[in-house]
Image (cartoon, rainbow, N blue to C red; front, side):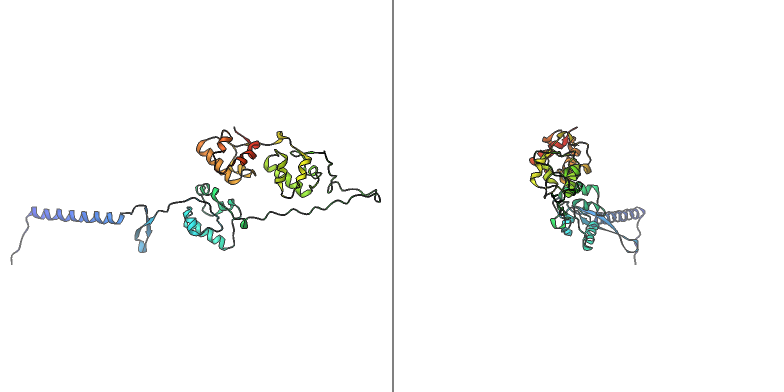
Length: 296
C-alpha cells in the first residue's frame, strides 16, 4: 500500500484553506441569525437553560383619531399607541365596572405618559351615558304674603328677601347671594349657581350670560341686573397654565390643548387672528372669549 506524504508548504496551504472555510462559515451563520426584515425590530428572549433567542416583531404605525375609552376595543387602543400592558389595564378596569366619566379620567390609566396624553387628550370623546348626571334644581318654598289680619307677622328676609320692583337693578359682578335672591324668580339655589358661574368666568360681560349659569333661570331676570365690564378678570393667554385654561367655561380641554400646542410650536399668541387658526375655535367661540383675553 502506498502512502502520500505532504510537503511542509502543502500542509500550510491545507491549514490556511481550512481556516478560510471556517471563517466564511462563521460569517454566514452570523449574517443569517442577525438578518432583519424591513419594518421590523429585533427582540431578545431568554430561553430555557439561559439560552438567548432572537425574533423579529413588526413595528406598529401609531394613529390618532377620536375615541371613547369606555367602548374602544383592544385593536383600536393599540392603533392609538397604547402599549399592550395598558390595554390589559383598561380592560380589567372596565371589567370591574369602572367607567371614564370625563377626559381627565384617562390620565389616571397606569403607565400613561405625558407624550401619549398630550397627543390623545384632544381626541377623547365621552358618550353622554357615561357622563355624570347634572343635579336638578331644588324646589324653593315661596314666602307667605302678610295679611291685614296678621299685622305683627314678621317676614324672614334671609330666607324670603323682598323682591325688587320694575326699574330696580343689582350689579351682577359684585352682588352677593343675598342681593341676587332679591331678583324675581331667583332663590337660594339659583343665586348660588350664578355666584359659582361668575367665579369660573371671571365676571359677567353681558346680562345674557346669567342664563348660562343654569337652564332654569328665568329670562326676565336679565331685566334686574346691570353689568360693570371693569370687574371682569382677564386671562393672560400666553402665561396661563393649561390647568388654568381648562377651568374657564369657554375654553375647556380641547381649546386649552390647541392654545398650549400653538404656544409650544410657534410662540406667543399675539391677537384673536392667531386663535382663528386653531381647529377647535369657531368665530362664535372667539367672540364669547374676547372680553376675557389679554395678550402680553
